[in-house]
Image 1: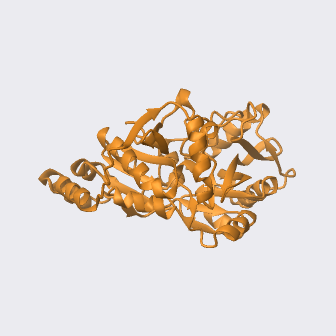
Image 2 (image 1 turned 60 degrees about the horizontal axis):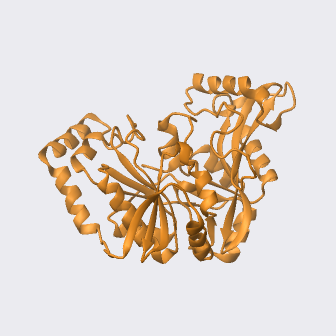
Image 3 (image 1 turned 120 degrees about the vertical axis):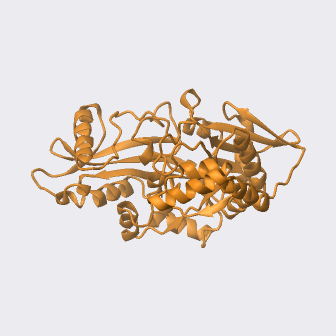
Length: 394
């Protein structure tokens, strides 16, 4: 790191806006499409009104210049029913990616976050080979892959649009032929019939809700202790994480006999993957998050899947770590694919988790635990809603 002046890390304040903008411009000029938010007050999860879940932005400064930045989310998690205050480390950006003189910036950012919140975790990270994944592993953070599952609904359209599979002229030509011949549509239908194991229960009812409430508080209390690690998902927290005024997700309440047994958070905005370098113009439906006891996960996933299918999506996707939720996805006809979505914990948090769950078999983590719910404008959708941060795709 250059030593014109001693580097320091400070909270992002109004006096830093121009320097953050210049930092983003330097990254862009170096071919990096990520950018750090240029508003010092977060447009998602700001620290206002005594919020239990909120985020802060921190900057590594050299003189008046920004050389690195990261976001830190403060929240409550349940460790087998015990509520614990933790932090989530994400969006670490370093000038070291374009200038080797700043190669130590990334480690300084993580060390600062661990000093502020020793019980820390991170999700996403874009795969084990990325800089941030290598960094946390070097600092002794254990990690697991959060599996990725997908379900193709419209086979011909999928073959024409899925750009990840269309690399190379001959590959694209073969996929076009399969799409035109109807093979793609037939294959998707056969896979759906062969893999889907619906358990239709006429007593189960689904309704879209605008917000959580007492019913969600009660649901969360009833299932929290069933998971060794789970972010608090009571009514107040979910309303903050998925804010109604600008929500790009839908909340689905699943009830049996008039009693709420689960909640699913789904997203199927037609523009969520517009001109995506992986999914083209496919309309993608995502099961983002869920609240339920493990033995009700299959009902929640089934009804969320049906809702997305009825809305005409081309492709359904989800990332889930807990075995019950993964089994539920398979019963709903999902296929497991390669995942870049990781879950890693600081040594201090890992110690507490392993005391309760040595093999991490009861950890409930999904895309809702990352930055996926963020409704604001942070970067291009190519970066923020694809493998780099959200674990979708190869």
